[in-house]
Image 1: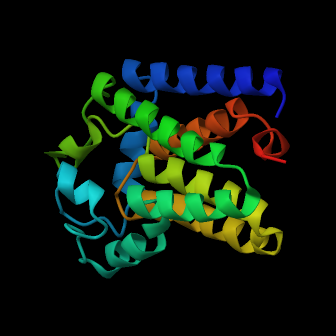
Image 2 (image 1 turned 90 degrees about the vertical axis):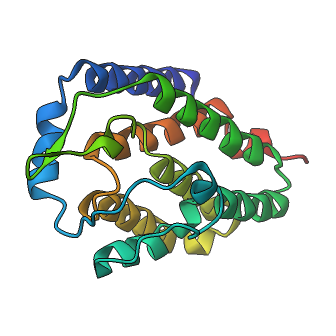
Amino acid sequence: MSRASTLASAAAFATLGALVAAGTLTGLDQWACDHLMPLAGTGTPPSFLGSLVPLLQASWHPVGVAVTQIVTLPGQLLISLAIVAVAAWKLRAPGWIAVLLGATIVEVAFRHVLTRPALYRDGVHLTAFDSSWPSGHALRCAVVAVVVALAWPRARTAVAVWLVASAVLLVIAGFHTPTDVAGGLLLAVLACGAAGSARALRLD
């Protein structure tokens, strides 16, 4: 990825964050809450421990939420770290671990500083979405997909299908809004681009 492309990704990520914070895209996210989340449950966001330990506080109802929990499991922090570590070992490119951790730190930082206007479902304020931008699951799923595709080229089609399915499920199961997912994917593009090409990360 060229320096110009990396700068373009950074600009797109920053612009999207600014639009979300300003409320410019609230209409889109609210429409999604009203029409694109048929599988959404009523669970509350996990605690820090729940976010750290896979499936510790996972919600299993309705069934669509359970399916999303399983499909997006490789995007969970510790599991994604394990997958990236194995792929990085095969590529002889330990820098990919730093890519994942660095991007996750950026994601957490933005969640603490960026608050979007309130979103509602059936008149109830969805507080979980107040600070849900960007999606960490979308971010880590994308990084995992990239590294796995590099390490095992024959799996590229499968991981591409999985990444698309994960992004869609995160929305329709009510885990994230469309702008959350877009932000996570843009951050992944930025992180991978900033790290340089796969050749630059190899230890030949």
